Image (cartoon, rainbow, N blue to C red; front, top):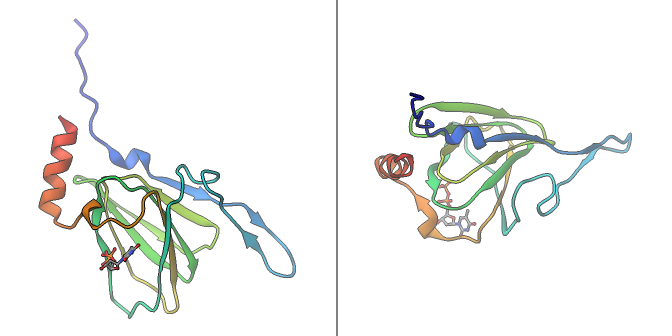
Length: 147
Ligand code: TYD
C-alpha cells in the first residue's frame, strides 16, 4: 500500500528573490518593475520606510491576504521571514534585488543602515484588518491552514 504523504506546510517555498532588470549606463544605472511584470501580482499600493533610527525594527506582523515585494532602494536592511516553524533572513542591499513575500508569513525588517530606504509594493490597498499582529494568533491561523 502506498502511504499518503501529507505535504508539509511550507509557505517559505513561495518566497522569491527577484532580480530586476538593470540598465547599466555610464550616466548612472536604471532598474524598474511594472505591474504584474517582474513581480507576480498586480500592484495596488506603494509605501516606503525611511529615517529609521539605529537599532529599530519595523513590521513585526503577517498579512492574511496581501502579497508584497520589498527592495532596498538605498542602503541596507535585513528581512526576517518566519512561517511559524522556520525563520529565514535576507540581507537586502542592492537597488535591483528584491524579495517577493506571499501572504501568511510573519515578517520584520531590522538592522537598517544609515539613510536606508525600503520600498514596498503591495497587492492590496491599506486595510488594517489584513494585519495579524499577534504571533500566537498567526500560529493558530497557520495551524488551521495546515489541516
Ligand atoms: P504599519 O504597517 O503598522 O507599520 P509597522 O508594521 O512597520 O509598524 O504602519 C504604520 C502606520 O502607518 C499604521 O498606523 C497605518 C499607517 N499606514 C497607512 O496608512 N498606509 C499604509 O499603506 C501603511 C503601510 C501604513
